[in-house]
Picture (cartoon, rainbow, N blue to C red):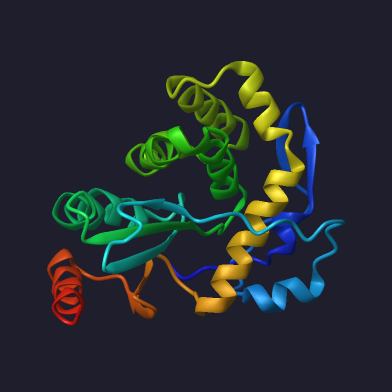
Length: 222
């Protein structure tokens, strides 16, 4: 997936009925994070949030994956490459895995808000649910339906109605999520998802066998 929306469409947010609504319509124009920032008028640039990481902090190889919750290829990556990588390398202490969210549209941002509202203990569980149930929670693409589906997912993960209401009303978190995406995507030159950065070297989406070959080569070079 190679669409990037203007970041202004994600940072100019308002709360209505306990849910986020964007003040500008979605579009399909690819705009770099740097270009989008030139036009942003958010009152607060947002805090850059810590990375979401699983695996041994001292693992010899670091794999960073840029991924969007509304990207079908990202859902496929999660079901295939990620699951195999986790079993073979992350769980065995050989790979430190960093998941960085990308927001093509407001729905990906809403998903990111739910995942992050779960806190450290719930993040990867909720993130996984968003990929595994992507077709179901996006449904017809109606905003109200998507919000209701995300609410149900949050409750399944143990969040209360009050937790979820507070989550969707948290403008500071939404702004920081977008600022964090923008900061890292600009630094790594991200223009598509999923994109991998393995020990600082950027790669496009690939099969698990190709990914495994790169990881093995990096391990052998240690």
